[in-house]
Structure formats: C-alpha cells, structure tokens
Length: 151
Image (tube, rainbow, N blue to C red):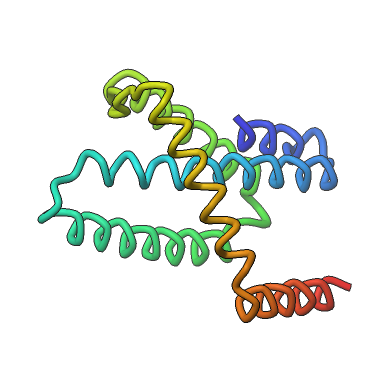
C-alpha cells in the first residue's frame, strides 16, 4: 500500500517529497517486520536437508533483483518514477493477495505455560548479553560511530 501512496504523491499532478520520505520510513518499518516472519515461515516449512539450497537461492535471487532494480532505476527513474512506484505497488498487492489466498499458517499453537517459559528465556538471554562487557563496548562504539556519521 505504501508504494501506491508513494506513486500518488509523486504523480504527474502532485509532488510531495517529504511525504514520500515518511512513506518510505513506514515501508521500511513493515519490511523490517516482514523479513524475520517470512524467513521463520520458510524455515518451518522447508525440510532440513533442503534449507541450505532454499536459503542460498533466496539470497542470490534477492541480490540479483537488487542489482537489476538498481540498474533499471538508474536509467529510467527520473522520467518514469510514478510508473515504477505504481508497478511495484501493484505487484506487491498481488503478491500479498496470492500469499493470503494460497499459503496456510504454519504456526503450531502452544500452551500458555510454554509461552511464559519462552518469554522468560528471552529476557534471560537479553540479560546475559547485557552482562557481556566487551560486546556492550562494541555496541556503544557502533552507536557512536553511526551517530557521528549522521551528525
């Protein structure tokens, strides 16, 4: 949906670059939620002996799509950006529709007690990571490095 809105605010009739930037951030937020969920679903559905080949194919196809999309965008984006966003939005909606109609949920429901144990182990894992001094120094230095680049 965000790509269709981006197409609208970059149409031949209207140009709102700040709204486009905000919509891109919303799109990144949803992509950030989608990727781990889709990866987990594929991990659950693919047999152990096939996982390496499936994830290798996904990795290479993702890189190929990024390269081809970047090259195509470099040549045609200035003149046809409205049509690009319209195309990407339409394909994304069709992909969502196909996913909704033809892919069934693979999550197995657990007891409430299992969920409590899992959430407790997650917090204990975070606590264990936070106690690692070298990692925390590294994390803090990465944060400062990123922050200084932004400033």
